[in-house]
Image 1 (tube, helix red, strand yellow):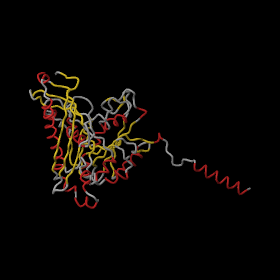
Image 2 (cartoon, rainbow, N blue to C red):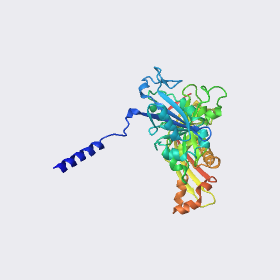
Image 3 (tube, rainbow, N blue to C red):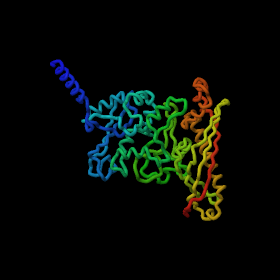
Image 4 (tube, rainbow, N blue to C red):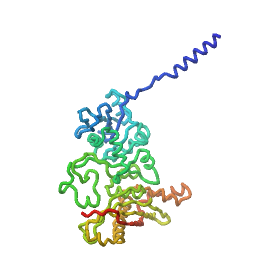
Length: 413
């Protein structure tokens, strides 16, 4: 009887111990990061910027521009920048400075400064992708400038919740000028033989009013060749997510402008609607505008039988014409001529784009490599072919087909 009682008491003691929470941390004891920025530090250090949302101080009226502050004056966002030899050490320093434990596992976006990517990205590679605690689903962006300066200027617009604002800015399904790439996607491609990664591109605008004469050329506006810092606008936020940062392995190769970013998305078959235009054949000073829709994913084939790869790409679009500025053209519009003009314009753009990626950037951003690998029966044969070395000399055969029709409404302008 005594043995049973002792056993019962022992089991009860063990069970009560299992219900204890010795190392538990309450939710309100954490400081949750919204954005993390990495910049080149002095010497061999890294400069880490942590942006926190302060839920208790977020006003229902949104955030005024100029200081990350809610309308009553209470800060809605708090930024802390620290410098250390590693990212983890910088977070440890933040823990000592703040009253709460810092966690970056819920951060929405990781912003890499241009200098950091060019000089230190490879050195901090393992820590970013393995040992830092970032979520695989965190969005990755490259800033054409300093990440800490960009984060300082993030002011929510049309949102009372800064977390929702940043989430929607980098994951806008309606955007045709950037991508929403996460850490997992980048890590999967950076050492792959099947393609190269690209990330969101962001920047601070150069001027509050880029519409002033001389700020941006008419050709850049017409051809959508502007970069994020030169968006043709007056007013609005100083932070812009637009364009794509292109990598060749772990090295930053260059940036894509607005037009090139759309061509990238069309090349991988995202099928996003895009407004486009051509000069009116009867009046070069006026335009025919249409909604361009990709009817299906592009057809891509790679011929590896020759000395250099031959890449064949076929793209099919549907153009719904909604604006003809010349009234004489409206009366006698020739749809076959419009289709031909659109096809010629798009064909040149896509050819120039593919050759730029291969020759200038040496980046397989479209992942043509995964189509080339289909020609090989074994991994050894594929490795022996050395796709990365041969890709930069590839030739491209691009076919663009456009089916144009008149929409239900024509606007006379």
